[in-house]
Image (cartoon, rainbow, N blue to C red; front, side, top):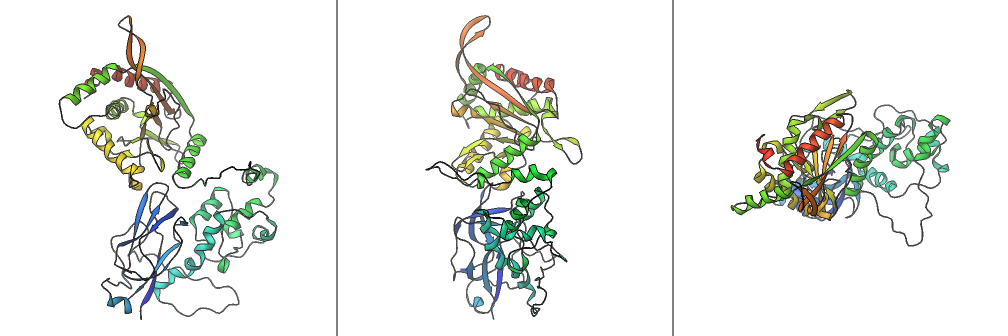
Length: 464
């Protein structure tokens, strides 16, 4: 007899808790091999093809294209063994794949989730060990994701969830990481709630109902801030879900504004000599050197002089952590929104290597093929908003970094050069920095050094 194995949306790493189904790569009835990609999903960071660790026949798919699923929700079920063995696909009823993404595969060290039995109900008979983890998620996935579309308008019917604590023994009946995060962020004790889902499963609606319940006076402002936005939008208004890349950007920038006491300083610089140096480099043949690469090389030299700006703040330890390597992020506008790919160990690269890496990552960003690892781990960000035809900006720091350098457009302007008025190529540079890691003197020194290198590239040679 074939054995039905359930494959859940794996932990895709980097703190991601949900993903949207972009395209199914298999249909019900298809034969799949171990490690064959079965679905393409989009996270807040990248598009990922998810391989299945089982080989056999696809018996069910969960979620239509465009559906957002939390990590741990069922994706597909696969019949392995029995009839599946007659196919060319290798069957693996109990072993699975060794080549896996974070959070699924052949790790059997975790105990299987036990089915919760309501008092008075008959205990289920023994089930095969491989099927045990699939019992609760298989019925809970639709219920977990549905409330995310629209919150219930009337709190009265579900009020007992907040006022009548249930006696919970063992694990709290919650599957969705989103529900746990919502409860944790707003101080809701999940053990005090009685879930309205199958077998007492706590859903997002249960937590939201608890948040809307009357609170003591001291907690009133927090509860009020969670009230639904007024629905009386003007006729013809368009509502756009704040999710995916746009949602991730909103979360990160909001967190930056909440946590980082930032300040900005700026200076105009004569970039005529920098542009002439670049033209001379490109005139000798070989790969072209980009302006962004030259600015990046200047930034890494400046960070070597002012390491305070290549750091992060550890709030838990109440410490500033200075980082040994410069992982340089750069802003790239794509059809999916603003992306910030990261060039690893930028301090060890020359201008030619930086140009090649910028080009490679930009191409991947535009094709939607960046991995989560390509978009995380940055220690300093370079933002060239001059490509949009603007002169200046006050960048928002890319949390948890400590600084960002913004570069405006380079354009011909009247400038006093060697005591005389001349037309020069001028650029505005702006530095936004975390005032906890340094004071204005350090930030000003960093920005002045960058401007000096832009105006006289020979200054950079002293540190190479």
